[in-house]
Image (cartoon, rainbow, N blue to C red):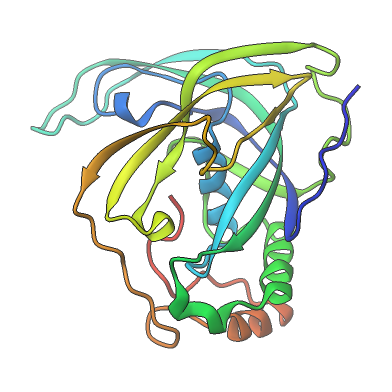
Length: 258
């Protein structure tokens, strides 16, 4: 029996689905064979909601995901372009016929004190919910660009999942997410790992600052991108008016979704 997780402030709930998905460890993505994790990572789901609605003013936190369809894989022979030109035959293993329910909420990006004037909780929340209803602002990808996805609103834990009353499945040590300077305040890029367990089809994610996560710094000396309302960012007031009028435009900012 599924127990609904308690809704958090500024929460949104949506379903994302597609024919194929490839949720791989970014460390192993460069060339060669690619094999998908059996379930979406925190970072992949964060990238999806950021493709729906992203602002440097806020940070999306993924609370939980519910796996709706049976986990299935399909292998394909792919000829990716090599860095030096030409291509080799590689074997990619995708998830197929995927469908997930996601519960997430946003918090203010405390490393952006210069954007305090853009912190209108009600307007950001309404824009996010309305944009989910419209299917998002940018293209949705399920882990990688060739895996097109689609989003629509839902009530988390509604309907039947293949894994209802299935018990626990331990997926072992895997990627949780990525630490970017804009969100951590540190001039470094890092990765987070954790031991992932699914219970009756639901995975509850620890937040990025949780002590149980294992952190690894990949690169140092990275600068934080600057944003200025009216220059390379629209104000929430401007966006809210456009959304209420039915204008579904992308943000003026660049590099939103990860």
